[in-house]
Image (cartoon, rainbow, N blue to C red):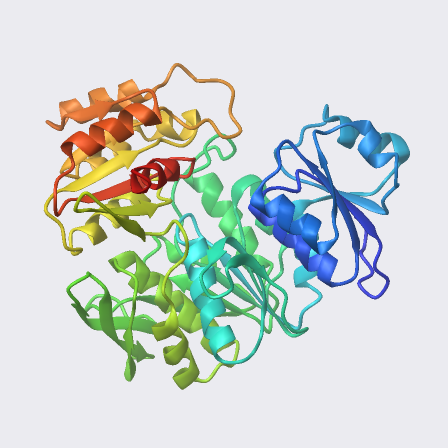
Length: 463
């Protein structure tokens, strides 16, 4: 694998530079003095930002993009196949090729203290929480997140040379390229079944990720993961657990005496090694965010951040874009947007919404990928049934082209079997018109999914 010399910046070309992770890594290298070029299908706010920073952008991908100025190496995403014209040109020229994950791993290794946030759910939120703690503590970390941080207004922050925080994604085993000094595993559940065979295959991948943590490092892991010792047994690094305090299990970092304010935001007592340590108040709703915050607290503690600074930073955290994000109000009802696209995430979000002021909860859901929808059809229906009213949009295909014979109409039928009537519309315009006619004063409308369903809420707010 090509070894980057950060002391001698070179020209790097990114195939698919417009993605939130790729654009963030490109920005880090730009600010480290590297010359950056890249291509993407369409112009976006992220590509315009890179252009403003000095990157050379191409819209549309062709061999010519690597012929005008030949780069030292080329970075590509998992979505790029071997028939991509720029990939083929790089091979033809004999240029070194790095995956996005390999680049992230080399950047991470350039910092003395690093955190990798892994888990099926909650990576972006926990990355943001940990980032808030370190920023609030004045440690100025470099950050690569999968969402926009309110504190920085970006998914990326180029800080000092010591601390680095990044999401560690399991898809295509990309987190195998990372060796964080502090590794986090939030949860392990079935997902990405277009790549993984089953839950045991997924668990093996998380075990390999944990084995990458150095001997003097720390693994922070959810203590309720089934058969935990399969993931943690005989690891050379230190292992600390987190979870909700109960009589059956004892976790290294635990939450107890949980209370909620009128908007469903929790406060709890933090216990470390069974001893009361502090009180923590969150500005984000849901039991899942209590667990995310415990992971962030434990990781920050492992990074030698004083507990008082940790608690102060947690109280400053106000959420991440597209994670139960209040967008505004129209016609007397409130619009919230959420990125949930897995049944467990949907259940967590709708459970949290029950504590938010509302008359009826409306969930406008856009399934994400045919593979995931088919694999979890019954689970999706069961989770969505927590909503009072359900509106379904067409499946957002993302990287997939094969429909597998599945559609949102199948999800509508599954909901009907549970006694829930779901409305289906094939266009966003139809959804918006239906909502305007039927949502009433005091209702809570949640646009939900990892695709472009957020546009529905934003269009409604322009009415």
